[in-house]
Image (cartoon, rainbow, N blue to C red):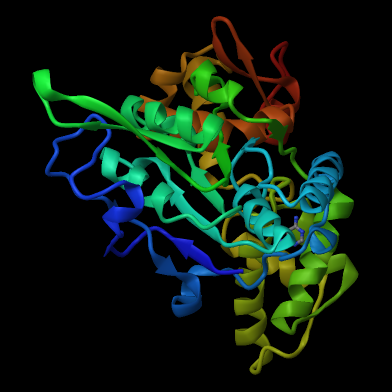
Length: 366
Ligand code: ADE
């Protein structure tokens, strides 16, 4: 499988889209340009060696794996492109990884891009005309696609067809260009922000869940083997407890633990135990339940300045000097999941469990 991700530029063959000068609702002079031909084989820094490549190596997300496993098998036996897949859920749970796994299982290429990179019509057209039959096209943050790009995608997804406008004003004509069958895998942290016409064009819509401790421990142990670390089981469990239910964070914490082990042990080949994990994660201000400095700042602000809430998201964001969208999609989901924060119609509130975790007296006093 070749992985190709956004970055460089190369000219597409305009003839493959029916001739030079065609564009969807764009000036005739617009050429078809592929915005994303950056091959991961030439850019190993873009590929995370800890990612599982096959469905069997992918730990957790049991329901998702079951659904996709069946779809892959059926699709392969019919020799078709897999139906379009929408993956949604908090960041770091493995949406990109799953797109790569899908391509690997289907034996096709995966082209990776993200909606903000598809600003001009020719960006998405360039990607679509350069697909090979049954390729996976992965669009991250798909809720951020602009309206023109969305409208190009509708016939592309439904009928593997591009509707291009040739000419301008009174001479404008529409011309259809066939595309090869392909699979769009869209990823979003905000499924509710997707327009319903776009959402309705996905045949498989799947939510990724936070991982439980058993799966996280297995993910950490697998990563330790890949990194050549001698990690005790209790140490893997400690990393799992503190990674906010998120493999990406587990792997990041493990790398920080490896740094400390390296410095303490001299060669990095010493055994890593629970005490070393504790030391490394204290250094990075990750507490025993996985809350980091941003989480504690949010809870602290709510408790200290607003008596625990309720407080509106914008007010909180301004108080923390953070962007509201980051707070809502990155910081809050884990606090909600832990039961430390509540979203109410009047704003955000710290729960009793949140107060206790922060060592704050209960609402009815100590
Ligand atoms: N590394 C990151 N996510 C993983 C997963 N779900 N399974 C195995 N290894 C992983």
